[in-house]
Structure formats: structure tokens, C-alpha cells
Image (cartoon, helix red, strand yellow):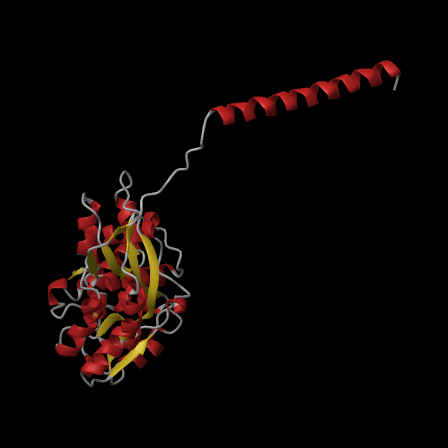
Amino acid sequence: MTAKRIGAALVAVALIVVALVVRRVVIDDDDASAGPSTVATTAPPTAATELVCATELAAACRAVQDEFPQLVVRVQPAGTTLDGLVTFQDAAPLWATLQPFPAMVDELRTRDPIGYGTEPLAASQLTIATPGGGRADALTTGCGADPLWRCIGAHAGAPWTDLGGDPAFGRIRPSVGLVDREAVALASFANAVAGYVGSPQINPATLLDDPAFLGWLQSLSGVVNESDISAGTPLATMVTRAGTLDIAATTAAEVAAILASRPTELDLNYPQPLMWAEAVLAVPRGAAAPDGLAAALTEQLSSAGWGPARDATEKVPDATTMVALRKLWQDVAR
């Protein structure tokens, strides 16, 4: 490199250094003249005054009510709460419910999200209960390699003898419950659809293009009317009115609660793909739950047969899918 080129390079470097120094001095002077900096502050969270509980968690909520007198506690179906929150304008309540109902709210009100954050409480595996005496064995052997819910929907209304059951069993009468109202019922319906498609990954947009699916759904939902679910859930109805249905979508926790309250003979089948109901405490953005509320609810749920939240290794589908499945049920099955 010639001396002339070296000199030009040094001049260029010097100019860059000078520019940086000048820039720093100007910025520092501007910062100094601006006076003390303003630090953005966040408003403290507002203490919540209301707790709404899904019916599946009613006993736990009522058990802790006296510990938190600052809270007004209400119990109602998760679907009812969901529909109300979609147009809610006041401060949203705390919500003890199942996943993914809190996210389903914002899925339906995208312009003004509530922004629920959730704290896991407990989990319970979705299962299928039948009266003792051989129906569970008939499902196992008669359905064979066919996914259990796909098999049940295909044979709903047919004689149990089609699956190798006793003629005395009569017709196959399944129920997933009040899907548009109860959280476990919607989760069970998602589990049933996952069994039909053979995967936990459900694409609701493709289901209506499958004529076989529509026939399966109408068969699954058409044997037991929603008005026949007189005790609130398929399991409670089956135990109290044995002639109404004989295949009940439920959770292991509800089975434990039923058996603790009244001795009865029940058999369980666990459908593939395995799914879990996950109970959570949902807190709206900008609000705060009372200290100890989540722990108290967890303790009550644990004593009622729920397992730790970490047990939920295979959860139900996401909020977008669950909103679509609920709408599908309302449009086709109900």
C-alpha cells in the first residue's frame, strides 16, 4: 500500500472516531439537559372480590369459601361462564375452571381480551365408565384394535351383542354429557373426536368434509338426549338412573367421588389417545387472587381424588380447536 493510500485510510478512521466522539457528547448533553429521567410505573393489581367456579370444582370452592370471606363465590357451568365473559364489560372475576376455557374467552373476544393468566391446580384422566358386569370387557374385546370412542360411536344404539356382550345388556347407550355447558363434557367430546381421527391433533375444518364423521357424531350423540342427563353428568345419571345410559364419559376424579359417596360397581376403560382434564385458577390481567387461594383449592381437589397438575402429560386440544368443537356440537349434535 502506498503512503498516500495509508494516509487516506488513517484520515477515514480518524473521521469515524471524531464522529463517534461528537455523537456521544451530543447525546450526553441532551440527556443531561433533559433533567431527571422518568421511570414508567405499573399500577398495582386490584384485589379480586369474586370467584366463579366450574361445576366440576364446586365442592372444592365451597370447602375453601370460609377461608376467603373477601370473595363472593358462585358456581355455574364453564360454558355458561364462557358465554357470559365473551360480552362482559366489568372487572372479570377469578375463575376456577378447566383448561383451556380461560384462553377460549379471548379466542372469542379478540378486540378486548381479558387476558387471563392461569395457575395449575390439579389434573384427572379422562375415562369411560360402565356398570360392572361385563360391558367393559365387551368394549375391550369387541372393539379390538379400533379406537374406543370411534368404536362406541359406530355401534351406539346397536345391541351389545354386536360387541359380544350379554343380550341382557340391551342397547349400547353412550353419553359424553352436556358438551356446550360442562367443561369435562367438552373435554370428553374432544377425546372422542381424537379417537375418531386417530390422533390428538384435531383439525375441525376437515371434519365436516367427512360424511362418515357426521354419521358417527350423530350416532354418538343421538341415543341419549341431553334432557336425559338428569343428574348433571353422565356418570351421576348412570348411577342414579341405570336405565338411561350405560357408557359414561367422565374423569377418574368423578369416579372416586361417586364411589366415596355411594358404593356401586363400576368398570373403567381408558380411551386412546389418553387425555387429562386440568383444573386451573384463572386470574384476569390487572387483578390479584388472595394469597393461598390456589394452594387451598389444590388441597381440596387432592383430597377429592384429583392428581397433581404435572400428571397432565397429554392435555386436551388448544383453545382454538375447543371453540370450534363446541360450535360443531351446537350445530350438528345438539
